[in-house]
Image (cartoon, rainbow, N blue to C red; front, side):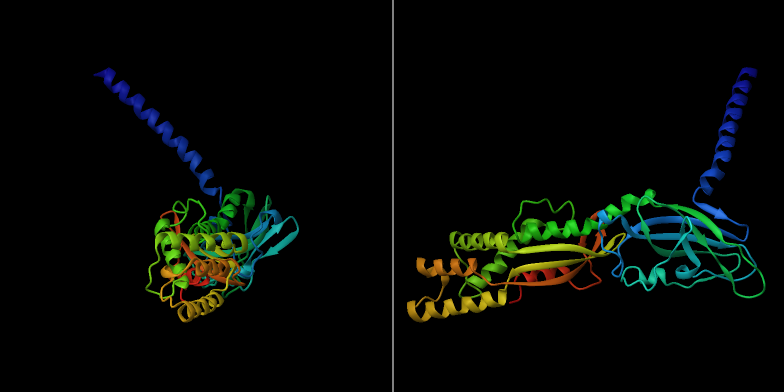
Length: 351
C-alpha cells in the first residue's frame, strides 16, 4: 500500500512540475504579439498582404505592398476612447513615420476599415488598418488613443511589426489571376492545363460549350448541327487563329483573403464583324448555289469560311471579373456581376 502511495505522490509531483513549467511559459507566449501600458491593451490578431484598387500594383520585384493589420484593443480606463485607424495608428521605420492608407477604394475592405472608432470604457474592440510597407522590414506600430472627455491622458502603445513574418501572404495575392488565366486558356484556347485543382469547374463540359457557341456563328442556321468532321475542321481553324493572334492577360485589381477581382485585358476576334461576314457568305451561298445548310456546301464554300476565320478582324478591350475562394477553390463571385457570362461574351456568346 505504501508503495502505491509513493508512486501516486511521484506522479502528482511530476504533473505539478509540468503545469508550473507551462504557467511560466504562457505569459511570454501571450505577450509576444501583445503590449499594454496599463490603460490600454493591444493584441495583434493577424496581418496579411492585400491588394486595393487605389494602391500599388502587385509586383514582387518592386518589394512593396499593402499590409492589412487586425488589432484587438481593450480600454482599461474609465473614459470612452477614440482610436481612428487612419490617423491614430502609424508605423515607424526608425525616425520615418508611415501613415495608414486614406480613402481606401475597395469593395472587399471598405466596411472593415471604416468602422466606428469609439472604444467604450472596460470594453475591447477589433480594428483594421492598412499600410504601404516595404518587404524585409521590421517596423514599430504606435497606437495613440484620445480620451473623449476630461483631462485623462492615455499613453501610446508600441507593438513590433516585422513584415518578414507575413511574406507568404503576398505570394497568395496572385492566386486568383493564375486560376482565372488557366480557366480561360483551358476552356477557350484549348490548352492542356489542370484547372479543376484551382477552380470549381468541370472543364470538359465548358470546352464543349465553348465549341458549340463558336459553331453557332458558322452554321447557316442556329439550329443546324454540323457533321463532326466539318465542325472539327472549322473549330481547329478558329483555335489556331486564337493561339496565333488572340491574347487574354489577367491582372489582380483587388484581393482580401477569399475575395478577389481580376482585370482581363483581351485581344480577340471581333465576333460582331465575324457574324456580319458569315451573313454575307450565307446569303451568297443561298442565292448563287441554292445551299440552305452549311453541311451541304461545297469545298469552295468551306474553304471561304476557313479563310474568313483565319483573317478575322481582332479587337481589344477589358473586363473585371470577381472571384471568391470556397473550400480551397476559386469560383465566380455570386454577389457581383456574372464573371462567367462576361467571359463568354468576349468570346462571342450572345452575338
